[in-house]
Image (cartoon, rainbow, N blue to C red; front, side, top):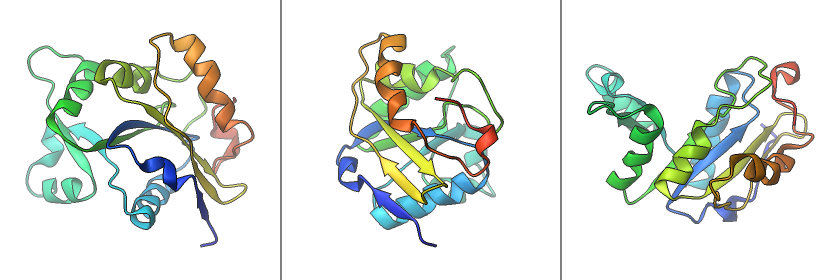
Length: 170
């Protein structure tokens, strides 16, 4: 399809949160699957535990899904961060835009999951303009969201999503 993967050598971590931007189209899903298949590095997502029951549970697990159990009063960030304790290898892909539509602010969950799980953030850019998936280096959050975001966002400068007008403006 003419795409390149840049920075695959940065995938040498067993646990991390992938900060995937921009997320403007359903095409991002299969692009992520192709990236996972080509690099041969397991990448995951979380979904409510009910998705992992019959008849489609096997499919979601095969696709890298991890069931999220929110019982016990945990909020979503805490529940996902706790999930990292259950696995020796978990590379969790999260689109901080939270939608494929334009947003002026990113959701902070990806960041606080990484902080609470004590894992690095790896920025991942899907650039449809250049036909490149670029994987950045590990970034360990300091628990100062505003300052850390200033260090992460320049990675995405000039990156064009499939539907550019829907992408977060860096």
